[in-house]
Length: 478
Image (cartoon, rainbow, N blue to C red; front, side, top):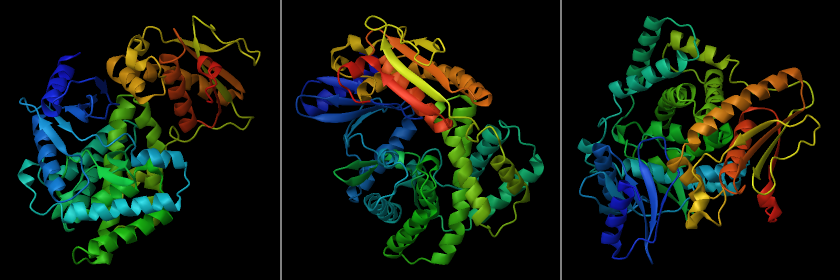
């Protein structure tokens, strides 16, 4: 075990009074925090390592405060002596985002009811949960103030606008930033602001929502968190549903405090815009600069939010240069879906075993395509907990993402295949074959094939034919 795993295991055994039987990394977040699911003979917990001790302190203080208020957050079980590790309650693996993706755009009554519960509890967390909270522990700032807003706007400018090479008057844009911030600061900013309130940070346990990752919380406007939830880019919530949930949220707030609904709504769309700009700055850094596929694939959804705001909302503040930049973003061609006037391109993606079946043949008659060897990636199949699992099981996926160079490999493969897909679409080709091989065709190749299938389906108008050769021999329905 690594040093971190050893420390977390010791902390678990001290808390649980029993030996650690399993410690597995959980899929990484977008931060330096590392999570492990730790099990003993009868107890389980989530172990967390974070080198940022101030951020840890904020999370621990917030968690204990919210728990005492009856809010659904993880219970803190134990804290390490070095302030970099702690144990928290295991609230499962199902996030609200997972339910959204499974729905595939079908916003059922059941999903709507769950969102209503979420926004109702959000109002309680912000208003009642914020009462008596020690804002002195907030990190990096106690308020979502002028400085915080300008940080987000600068991130948008440098990490997105400049990266896509949009021409703008920098002085005029800075003037608009300051005007925009002054306008937003006029809203009521006296309640707890979660800061990153989106469906990935809302877990569903026994049908009830639980909140995680609020360590960046601070005092701010109620509107920001609701904007984060309802305008989350990839959630792609229909606007009629957004309006229903806005109304439901306002009813929940009105039950807790006096509120001017019109004034709230006027400021609300301003906070929607600054949240969208903050998100685009993040997507620019993680996607355009770091070339992480998930963030790149989210950019078109974020641009759709900007398009909707430009078409439907008139803010009571003049922002001419920012408006010019936003219109230019909506006209960017590189983020439009790639289509072809010819018959759709079919991309056949396979996972296979070098030892058992060998490289798959190409039934299209084109003589084959890309073949990527995954055997240099550290093999999770060497370890007993993973032997009966595949590259689709979360523990295996987490192992590959945390313990190997798989994330880099994914990025490089997606880049190479994307060039071929775009070229084939332009030339009207109808078939492309991509195969991933590993020793047994069970872990690494399955993971890579699934990753590429998801990436291409989200970014190109192509037909995906996905085949897992060794797994389908076992009657695994793909």
